[in-house]
Image 1 (cartoon, rainbow, N blue to C red):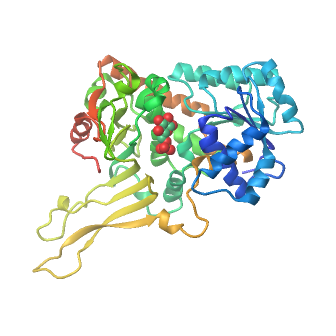
Image 2 (cartoon, rainbow, N blue to C red):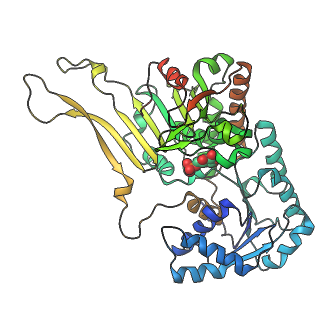
Image 3 (cartoon, rainbow, N blue to C red):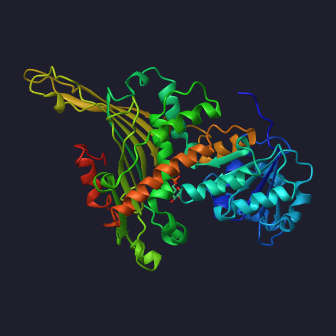
Length: 487
Ligand code: BG6
């Protein structure tokens, strides 16, 4: 891929917000520590709050010091010199005027909108009117890009009126996670899996994103979205796409994204009957998670709500490779453990040659890709249990493990924040790990179908106790397909 010129300035809107303080500024610091920030690269944080540069810098330093990694004095000195702060109202040209002197000398600015998506359209229009949206500039957006297809189109159109598509970087932070990228390596840097990666050999796929945290104070946002729009439309469909896509011809942004869009377009439309038979919505009631009492969602929300905090569904991909292979997706808040995993369940051997052990007694191979909390890849294989028995042999299933934690441990090794990779890619202008407009819209089109089917079927969320694996219907839906969740 031809190298794009590197950005020389980051303007961080929402510069004092939670995302900036917990993720973005620490990520930039770590990039600087590893020598990834270009010489002369500057960071101007901006928000409405009046604050001096000194106060902002102190805040960033305190945030960094509070982290387990600690702060290296020499790195901090270099990083601190890049930082600047200016109070500005980004939604008007007049408000943006305050920013102008701070951007002096920058030829290739990147604008990061760590602000409410409801402001994206206005900020982009203001950036254009202020003359900041120069040809070499880039814009970074966070989810949620809309709440449905129609609202996402409106946002995309407003941003697209100011920035060309190749200058728009839509973040799905799951794509910045090490193991998610490793999925691409695993599939396409090994000859072993690809010939088996289809409906001849694979029985089904499970994708679980379980969280122990509840919604808590985020309810004003969450209540509008629910698990379907907050997790499934983006993170989980991205994981599904990476598992299901055809081999791209190379790692060019459009090569990879074209393949993902094809998968999204092949997702079978959800009908009202599917809603009842192949999906479930849940909402947590009070319970105990990790030994601690947890309140009901309705209590956090302050009133009863129709929003799901848990969703599980069976997804079918109508194409040659995946016909007949169900993908079971499940996500929820206040589940018993924090775990993100992808399970590829292979079919059993067609015939058992082992006395007394039918082919279904032999545990079929399973590839388990754990993304969180630990990064690990395990391949379950059958092998002979050691020792001798009276006639025949005893078999057992054991994992072949590629623990990334162990593989990369050593001095200086640490788990990177997903945003480090993504910020570095925006600086370098590489959009492979960002979501293209037609991709977001294809995902919304399918998700709108699920939401409509739920509405038509009158599916209210079923209660589940905090600390449980969701409503009973989540088990019933996979059992109807004669499979079971791997918990
Ligand atoms: C965010 C969702 O996009 O992802 C949150 O809005 C969710 O509700 C979070 O908790 C999960 O991200 P991670 O990286 O902690 O798995």
